[in-house]
Image (tube, rainbow, N blue to C red; front, top):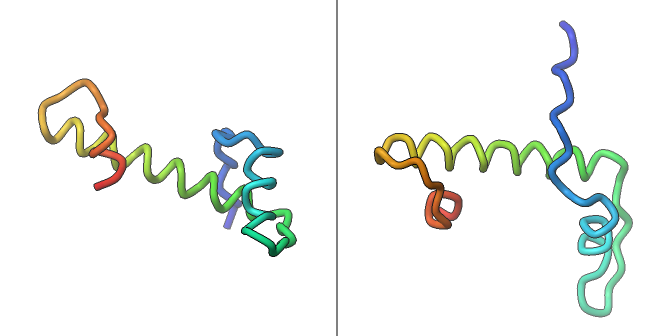
Length: 68
């Protein structure tokens, strides 16, 4: 089975890694595939927001489309 084409990166890698690494006084390591997994999740959220917006007959995606 062929590997699915990697989706365009929607995150700023250095800023995202920085946010993942630090949590208060603790420091965490970030695996090489962590950004890819988070990016996949962001793509899914975008798709869901688009579907919700369209289902409600709108052309403007609102914050509640993403957070619902």
